[in-house]
Length: 56
Image (cartoon, rainbow, N blue to C red; front, side, top):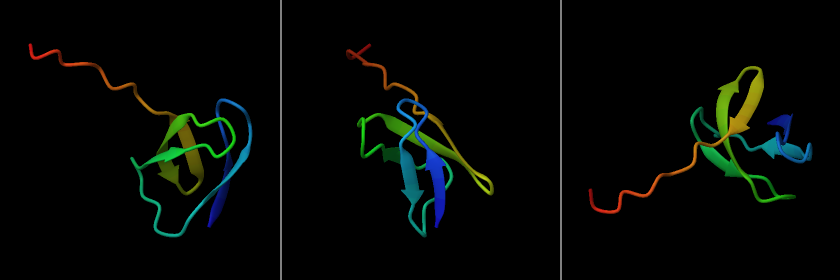
């Protein structure tokens, strides 16, 4: 398990065994979506916002 800090609120987040790169996790403190971009060393960044399609 690895420990990282939330990019938004700096809360400690423990990445569970089996966490994968590109996985989206939610900060337990502030609820922001974060994307795992590296596991060694563990690193997170803000998850990209999903854009609405609106059927176009």
